[in-house]
Length: 240
Image (cartoon, rainbow, N blue to C red; front, top):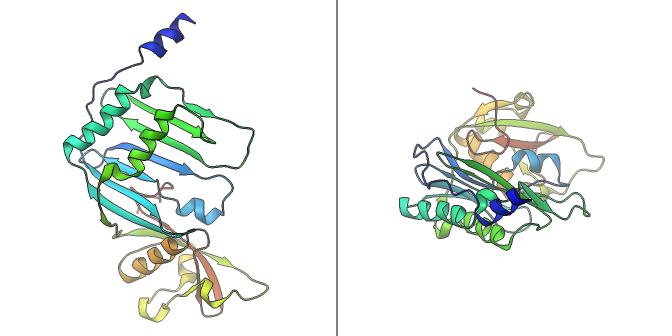
């Protein structure tokens, strides 16, 4: 009990120092996944990710299942201020998980912070946890106030899952895959394939336009698309 009280009153305060390399993720905010379609979970992108050089990629919901993916670079001072807020508010002494678990199938919010001398993950289920936790979460997913440009991946791992319908879906619920233009049939992507260029741009548009049902049609066949972007997606693709 005495140890717990001491930890509460004087939580760990690691130095606000981090790996400045562009490959090091120092902040990540997620809110996944609960009871959702499997393709949503596979296509899920963290709400925000910040790398050591200040690069940030985050997701904005447009309407319903539509999303917009943005990127920007935070000034070093802004990134330091964000990380300092975690240290100053006792984040490194908080519990790993908070929540009211009487409700099932909800997503779980998580914040992950990686400093040079310490790393910590704190998750919140059903809005549990300190008020400051949610303030910090909102600050991160709000991109620290940055304004961004559209994030466009240059290479990704595409999987097309065949989908059968007893009744054909409405034409406005899918896009037609232009197999002749791309020179790539989705039958080839059924075993997963690395893509770039126009085929990737089209698939990326599909999963962002409806992350719950990323449906396309090729000929008389229908497919749900999953696009995994190295270093960005929650589910990482295998090495090329």
